[in-house]
Amino acid sequence: MHAHHHIPRIRSGPARRGSIYVIVMATTLVVLVLSMGAIATQRTLAAARAAAREEAQARRLAASAAELAIESAQNTLRWRSGSASPIFDSLELDGGFISAAAGDPVDSNISNNITDPILITATGRIGSARQKVSVRANVNPAYLSCLWGVMHAGGGITITSASIRSTSPITANGSVSASSSSVRCDVSAGGSITGSAYGGTNTGSQPARAMPSADVVTTYAAMATPISYNALNGGRIRRTILSGNSNPYGDVNTSGIYSINCGGASLEIQDCRITGTLVITNCPTLTITNSVHFSPWDPGLPVLITTGSIVLSTDATDVYETSAGNLNPSGDPYEGGTDSDQSDTYPSIITGLVYAAGNIQFTGRSTIVGAVVAGGNISLQSGSNVVLWRSLTNAPPGFVTRAFEIDSTTWKKVVD
Image 1 (cartoon, rainbow, N blue to C red):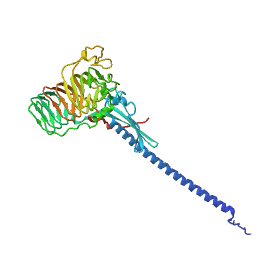
Image 2: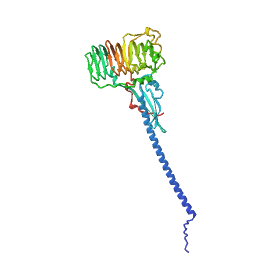
Image 3: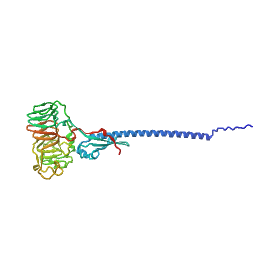
Image 4: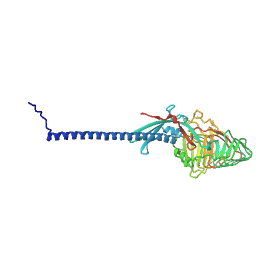
């Protein structure tokens, strides 16, 4: 007998169709999952790229914040004392925010020494990104060229039957002339130098030297504590002490900066001790007579600055406490000492930077240890005797092109 082989028949009923449906659905699900995974991957990559862009932008913002902080920094005790708080905080810039603060990398005390460098810590924020950097800035002032020597006139200098002595040059953007005088210093001028009374090296036809901006006086006035002109005795400051610790006319300014708006009237200063920065506005002529002892409270600031002109008619007589009263009370030391008596004397001398937007005229015996700058002309009148010693401390705002300089080797990323 032959065996019969049974060949099964393929059925195409409902079970077959169900299996195909399951296979199709499974395939679709796999494709869907793969597609969703690809979309998620793309989204993750896009988010990562966006986060990287934000971090890069935050780093740029932090660097910009540090540079802005350096540009706005002023190397004075007043600025250093206030920089314990942020220099600026959450300023908007390019769609983000910047902040910056200053510290002292030498002894952690930013306000005790104006020769110390500063350490700027700056933050940039944008979106969810935050970056922080630090950089050191050294004290490296570039003085305006008007402070190249010890005396400078934006106009000319005229010396008539007078004497001037200095170890540093006197300079003018205009011409210099001397007659029947003794000029014992080097002279540099933008114009001509005439006369035969010179004992140093003369250099004419020089480029004009840079002067402070027109708003330099109002800039200092904005930092000052006002003294009412009416509080003065007949438009005179006399026989008193004015300092960062003492103000007989009103509130004390702890940086020793005081402003007087004279309202078009004159002002005379005599027989007193001023240890501060005096800012005089709306005064056609400020006259300094008899004996005075001037020095800045903050060594980085000018001692006297005015929108008008100055007449220096001082003499060589000391300032006596017997007539002026006690000028070194507690809180106002002179050469390190204070007392309550009235037996001390003080040399008649002006220490620091003197600036007048107008003219400066010397008519007496003056000793200045610092520098003298006039926006107009400077004249030494008959009989005047002027001794000048150039001595500037650090960087008076408005008279430097740069108070701090970034040390580019010190940039660091800061991790909190």
